[in-house]
Each structure stands twice: as C-alpha cells, then as structure tokens.
Image 1: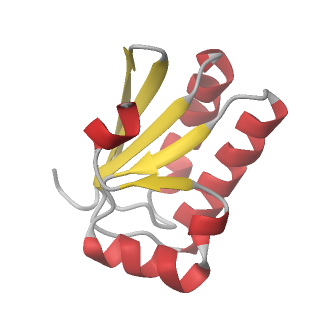
Image 2: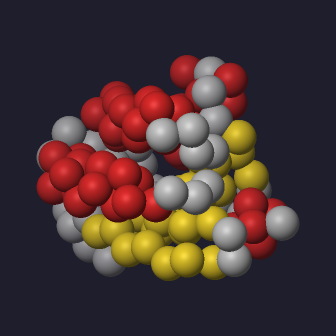
Length: 113
C-alpha cells in the first residue's frame, strides 16, 4: 500500500472484532479514517483488536486516535488491544509508554488466544 494512503477493514474472529489498519497513522491520514473507526468501534459490542502490522509509521495524531478509541471502548465497557507493531511504531510506543494504556501482543494469533 502506498504510504500516503490509509485504510481500515474489520472482521469478526471468534468473540473479537479485528480492525486491520494499513498505512501511516499521521496527521495527513488519521482524519480520513477517524469517523469510520469510531463508528466501527461503537458498533463492535465485543473486544476489539487493532492489527497494526501494516502501519509503518505513527505520529502524535495517530496516537491521539488510538487513545480516543481506547476511551470510547472504556465507555462501552469493551476491551481493546493492539498487535503487530512494526519496529518504528513499537519504538514510539516504548518512548511514550503506551504499554500502560493498551494490552499489546506481538502478532494477531497471540491477540486472538
């Protein structure tokens, strides 16, 4: 996928909703998916797993979007986790301390167990 493009799609897997995110989560792209993402999470009604294995870069705008999504899930009393962090994204998560907010799994199969 071109790094300037972003996309999301979801699928129900067992008792969870997996949201696959593709592309850079940055100031240029997050506004393109925010409304759809919020609607998707609002309708989920079961635990949400964000698969970020196709996200090579995340900025503060992307982090804000994830935290906003976390708050929405907390309001609805559904759990949220993240999997598949690429090295550059994982480094940002480590620096910011996002592990304190999210349960993070190395890959999708681990997150679905």
